[in-house]
Amino acid sequence: MTDIDDLLRRVSVKASATEERLPHTATAEEVAQAESILGFELPPLLARLYRDVANGGFGPDYQLFPLRGEGRTAVGVYHEERATSERGEKAHWPVDVLPILDWGCGMYAAVDCRSPEGTVLLFEPNGIEDDWHDAWYVDTESLAGWLEAWVAETGWYEEDADEDGEMRRWETARQRLSESDVIG
Image (tube, rainbow, N blue to C red):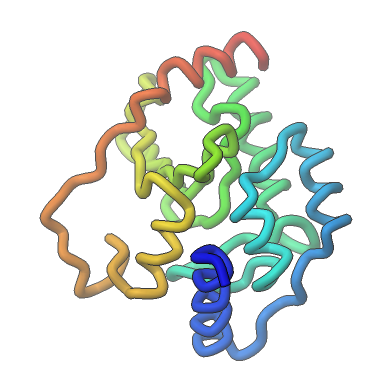
């Protein structure tokens, strides 16, 4: 068993223990359709999470969005944020960054799908008026690390979490948002 297989097994065990009923997993075809609609591929671990654990409905606090389906989905929220970003004077949501969880108050956990390890970002727009790159932080360098923190209950969002360090700004945000201005 690889480390990723073991991580997905532990995520599945925790998800099953914390949720009364998990949604069905996404099929490989559903993941491929989502990627086609998005216009980019998901990092391998994110695709496996949806295929091997469940199509959302588990995870920290407010739970992961389903990839596609009824209600708010990762694909739907991505398109909403991109459309809003394209209508504004300055882009606030970069291409290829998939929102996976709504923290509330306009904040999202999102995965940079250009990064093979699936860097998990925090979008925290509160108090931002114009410099949208200041709303983006690196939550965890990899989706695997983010999932490990959830399983171990050591994420920043946990009540007893050690809050010694602050999240660092996502240094690539300014450049990626300027790409969005050109692409949008």
